[in-house]
Image 1 (cartoon, rainbow, N blue to C red):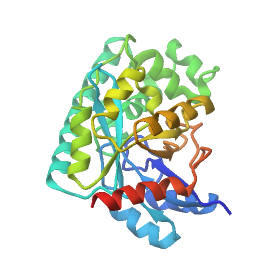
Image 2: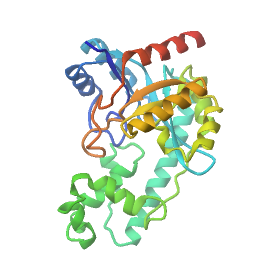
Image 3: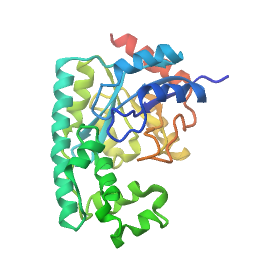
Length: 294
């Protein structure tokens, strides 16, 4: 029996995650995963729950986080941190990113109101479980506010071809760059995120490298101090996986595998463990590198 892993998972401690940490471990047990990492957005709140659940379900656990950073070309780049430890520098960074998220959320709500959608800020904060809201909580308010139910612009999201993944389509058509309610994302620089993870005893890995704008930028990020790239991702085609594996080899980076599982609300087509080639041997390489850097 193959030993499989998933090193990119979001729980309810990510504002856009659906499930508790315990339930994620229960699901992982059911589908036969041997090891997982909970990598919530800019949060390490999941760690105590995950330590307990790991023992309960007999699944190996790697403490993790996913830092939202801004690269020099203005794009968001997500840096996964494995084997992280709670420390003042990391906590200060997470707090700073959280403050950025609050500001972005307020500006998005205002923009949506300006183009005619009814938005209740209190509902958004509630949907985000009093955490800094991401786009998911804001979009849930757009669709959940009764005053928007008969808005003709939303009909195709409720009943049409976009209803099977309405949040993704709405984001692309309203909140993405050059769209009516776009707000530039603000966060810490990518290099700072990498350095903070290292300072916390962690191993920084570039998440879903497909979203880097070209090989030259990928090379620059590789030279910023990451130790690996998430070559095996739900977002990558077989050809892209092979490309990123080759790139990792050329730049002496390890390869990791992660689904970016959130649950059915924000990413209904991304399944826990829903990746190919997610063999335990990839984690062994990460563990070996971590041991050598302690």
